[in-house]
Length: 379
Image (tube, rainbow, N blue to C red):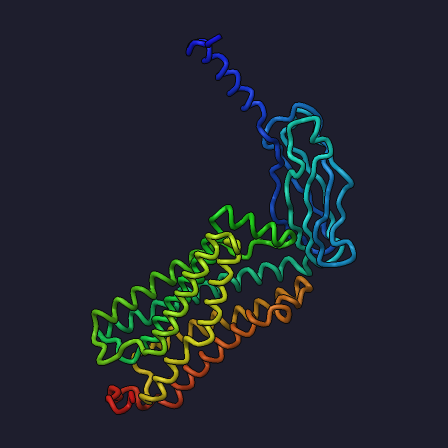
């Protein structure tokens, strides 16, 4: 028996209403909660849809940085039918981190997911010290962001880029693009964010909005500086063969691993981590061409000291912040468990000190009357 179009319309409408009635219920709760040791705090949870009956919620601790209890939680909480929100009290008893999943114990009876919400608790020594850590973070973020401008202004003022090493610019742009890809992917792309949570069930996404802004801003300002190299006097400066080979190898590696990722041999998260390693490697070598060029010319003219001083400020404060965080969170693995990150921070600061010594001590009197490098000097 065939059904007419008019007969099918009510059926479709009923099916649509049935689907709408099967909306999955979850809980809206803060993703991150910071507590000072010994303090109490009420945590509010709100159902995403009106509850048709009582909902019983239990707590499942999936990660804890300490063997002892970091926080005291109730055994369970109850959300009455048609309730808009409820809260539970948590007490900070030990410095550390803990990840808790709020789970439904009656998901078979009502249309709710088994896992309702995920909360990451951080218990710290002092809230005041945590505020200071945040302030330091914003100060070094601003210092690093502003550090790109002195070089741009210096080039514009002199109408020349003589003294600014092109290898440094090329490597720096590649490093920031790689870092930007990592930050944008981990901050904005849901698939990669879910892969991170799956591989790090007790961790927090390390990328924030400030990281994304810094990366995009750094790419823009570095690209602007490179444009100045085409507009202003540059003498015979060009990107060296060594730097060209390094850049070609780097991007070939990125292209090959892209095809490997598309073939599902590695995850997109792993692919982005490769770009973070590229950024780390470039940070190790990018300052060497500029420092060597200053040495050969016996001058720092053309290389902005303002850029160096701001970078030194940001790098030093980032290291200070790492020590303060380690103390406040009782997690010295932030430093000693990740020697790469800490070592690169120290490495950058040491290069800044070298540039400061070159500018103010070694070549202070020679910067005003420098001569461009001759062909013999480049050989």
